[in-house]
Image 1 (cartoon, helix red, strand yellow):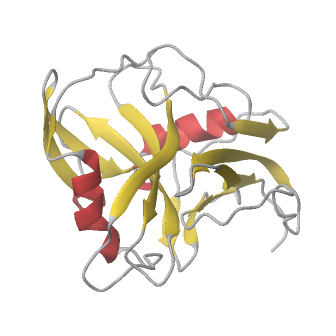
Image 2 (image 1 turned 45 degrees about the horizontal axis):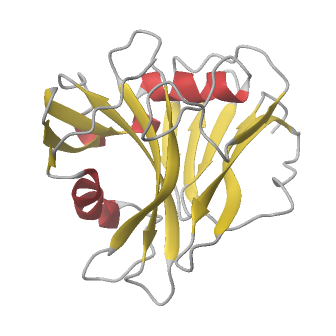
Length: 219
């Protein structure tokens, strides 16, 4: 169970993401950089207790219209070997010291935890309260134990796809579009999906599909 420390972060998570976001192919904001506010999200537990796992939802008001992004992050007490390309930045944590922050889609610990959530082997946790289930996160899955120890990562205009040699694909929607009627229906049917909610600028809440896990199937 992850312990939430209410302490200082320098720079803050939003400051790290603000600097990193324009480098992503799914960034839709202004040329001068994003103007971000935290809108929602949830955490997952690392079974080993070593890695912090957070799915941040942030809204950017720098473009022609507000855009909401899903930003999965991992927080580590030491650099992740071979993952320099996935480093979002470092920050000083008031309790834990220096933390290395990574794009979670390129961190196998987060990918395994998200797969476990979709398949019913883990529970989403509150962002701000220790040992409290997240509200507004809905998971629908068929069970199983899909291996994601070996995968390739591809970013495009809409999001991030993680594919295994066995044919399973985990798709994360980085640009969140409200979908009150539920998840899309992929060609071969998903193993499961995660939907979540966030606060809009006017204080109401909306929700969308965050991630969809597809099993192996014909091309």
